Image (cartoon, rainbow, N blue to C red; front, top):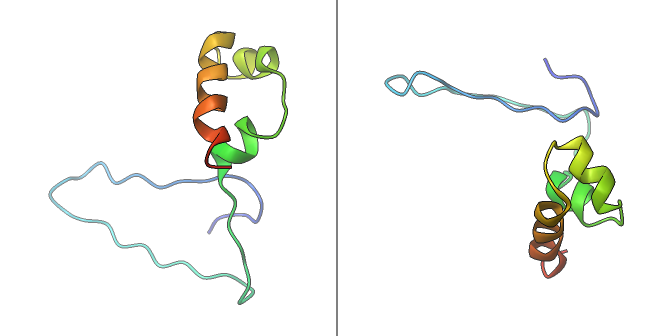
Length: 71
Protein backbone atom coordinates (compact mmCIF):
# COMPACT_ATOMS: atom_id res chain seq x y z
CA UNK A 1 0.00 0.00 0.00
CA UNK A 2 1.29 3.44 -0.92
CA UNK A 3 0.00 6.57 0.76
CA UNK A 4 -1.65 9.19 -1.43
CA UNK A 5 0.57 12.09 -2.43
CA UNK A 6 4.19 11.10 -1.73
CA UNK A 7 6.46 10.07 -4.58
CA UNK A 8 7.15 6.35 -4.49
CA UNK A 9 8.80 3.71 -6.63
CA UNK A 10 9.40 -0.01 -6.74
CA UNK A 11 12.54 -1.91 -7.67
CA UNK A 12 12.91 -5.63 -8.28
CA UNK A 13 16.49 -6.69 -7.48
CA UNK A 14 15.90 -10.29 -8.62
CA UNK A 15 16.56 -10.32 -12.37
CA UNK A 16 15.68 -14.03 -12.64
CA UNK A 17 12.15 -13.60 -11.31
CA UNK A 18 10.12 -10.74 -12.79
CA UNK A 19 7.96 -8.80 -10.39
CA UNK A 20 4.26 -8.21 -10.89
CA UNK A 21 2.59 -5.13 -9.57
CA UNK A 22 -1.11 -4.45 -9.37
CA UNK A 23 -2.20 -0.93 -8.60
CA UNK A 24 -5.52 0.74 -8.23
CA UNK A 25 -6.74 4.23 -7.55
CA UNK A 26 -9.73 5.36 -5.60
CA UNK A 27 -10.87 7.45 -8.55
CA UNK A 28 -11.25 6.83 -12.27
CA UNK A 29 -9.44 10.14 -12.83
CA UNK A 30 -6.46 9.66 -10.50
CA UNK A 31 -4.01 11.62 -12.67
CA UNK A 32 -0.24 11.51 -12.75
CA UNK A 33 2.52 13.99 -12.05
CA UNK A 34 5.85 14.17 -13.84
CA UNK A 35 8.31 14.60 -10.99
CA UNK A 36 11.22 15.98 -13.06
CA UNK A 37 9.04 18.65 -14.66
CA UNK A 38 7.38 19.45 -11.33
CA UNK A 39 10.73 19.96 -9.62
CA UNK A 40 12.98 21.43 -12.32
CA UNK A 41 10.59 23.27 -14.65
CA UNK A 42 8.70 25.38 -12.14
CA UNK A 43 10.94 28.33 -11.30
CA UNK A 44 12.72 27.00 -8.21
CA UNK A 45 16.09 28.72 -8.00
CA UNK A 46 19.06 26.65 -9.21
CA UNK A 47 20.96 27.28 -5.97
CA UNK A 48 18.13 25.76 -3.95
CA UNK A 49 17.91 22.75 -6.25
CA UNK A 50 21.69 22.27 -6.16
CA UNK A 51 21.64 22.18 -2.36
CA UNK A 52 18.62 19.88 -2.26
CA UNK A 53 20.17 17.38 -4.68
CA UNK A 54 23.76 17.81 -3.43
CA UNK A 55 25.10 18.93 -6.79
CA UNK A 56 26.20 22.18 -8.40
CA UNK A 57 24.16 24.93 -10.05
CA UNK A 58 25.46 24.14 -13.55
CA UNK A 59 24.03 20.63 -13.27
CA UNK A 60 20.62 21.92 -12.23
CA UNK A 61 20.72 24.42 -15.11
CA UNK A 62 21.44 21.60 -17.58
CA UNK A 63 18.51 19.62 -16.25
CA UNK A 64 16.23 22.69 -16.42
CA UNK A 65 17.34 23.35 -20.00
CA UNK A 66 16.63 19.75 -20.99
CA UNK A 67 13.13 19.90 -19.52
CA UNK A 68 12.25 23.38 -20.76
CA UNK A 69 11.59 22.20 -24.31
CA UNK A 70 9.39 19.32 -23.03
CA UNK A 71 7.45 21.19 -20.37
